[in-house]
Length: 155
Image 1 (cartoon, rainbow, N blue to C red):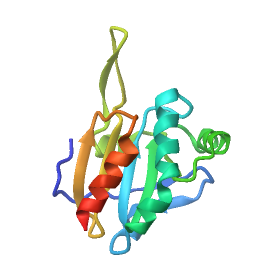
Image 2: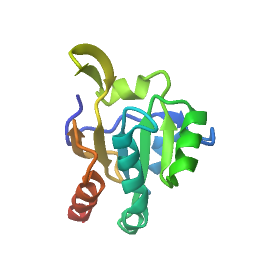
Image 3: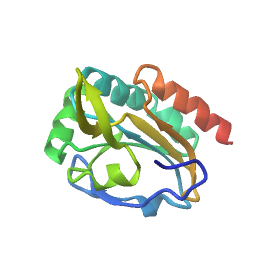
Image 4: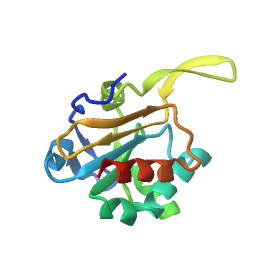
């Protein structure tokens, strides 16, 4: 698992429109909020993605770009985005490599069965590419506002 103060792992992933997003292009220009979530369309993931979208303009006012990442493919992301009016970019990590880099691919127990899955997690990366906040195992409800408060404290 990553720790505050480390350099954020860089990556290139496609978004819902199949356009490649290169994380290194944001260094020196924007703070980044990366939120990892388990699956498009589930109630908690929908709540989290719509909350971040609802507050996207506030994040932008604080120099932040918000992106969500899951292992769903680009087409599923586009359907999820369009159905729920999600405005933040959704990145597709179908192979799970970025999930592993960020330490969010973990063994989870669901109904007594252990299996690998994405642990809902969020990372605040400053303009220098350094992890300022590392949050594993977050709750979807109210999370976007918690992150917005943390971003305001960065200034």
